Image (cartoon, rainbow over all chains, first blue to last red; front, side, top):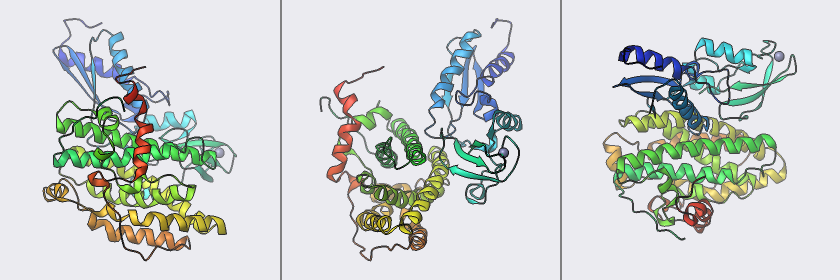
Length: 167
Length: 258
Ligand SMILES: [Zn+2]
């Protein structure tokens, strides 16, 4: 619980940890810190303001994430916390942490290729199967079950899998 | 329509943001009309996903227009409470879906432009527009790749798919010129480094389009006469029908929530 003894720096750290623990509703193994969506936490006179950056323009998970952050802070005693959206600079999959990429692979989703350049977008993509590690894979559908995913298939183990698209 | 349309103060920056927001909303709505009707499941998802990208772009641009205007309007009011004459989208984007070939050719012509346009806009002196451009550019890149593949598949497919793709190109070609036009309002922003002159992108766009169309064994019309009017609110009859569907709920039940 928040007490008057904590100064703003300690409060900020506490609020950061709470916000950082909120997960993506569509990929619940990833926190918003793993995704690189959490940008800043500010505390002014005991009031918390969290800044997040949207992933894909039309991603419906963003409203949910915003609400989850407010609720998580409320549960821990931060009353009236606000979440604001920061557009600039624009989010890229390069901001996903190494930890996030590992968790994604363990969950069965191939992580985005690093270096979200146009070469990564248009070049020959080598995507490793998250099940068996083979790079003998092919794309089935460029647009998958959510804005962030494409559907791929492994030609070695025959398993279909999601690939988190470069952005 | 049972509730009145809003008034908009169309300063150059507000008008600029509304034009791009309207492009994204109207094309996004057209794509959403395919939901559940596409020729295969993967394509149904692709069209819905592209529509969602565009809806997201529209929301960011409307919100920015509202902030710049500062008159108490918001994204919903811009989308739901302006009538046909207040809409500023390109005529190309309000054209009916037609058959799948028409939808893909429309997508191909526009995404080819949007991809170049947003990439250039990333250097805008306006930080918010530059950030919106950085997102939209990546989304447009996926859209142009997807639609290019379809143009080749349709053009270089069966006699029937070739015929339909060629007919779509012939029907929609006259709407492509408007993408490269800029009026005085927009020139004020171009000179200030906020916007880019779309005419400078035309040769690059034409090269991409010519290459893909050539690979698809299709051809571009020789006709250079171009239709325009959307940017100043002079629309084809199709937009009114589209808006009556898009706006029916908020116009019939003002302020409804659920
Ligand atoms: Zn495998």
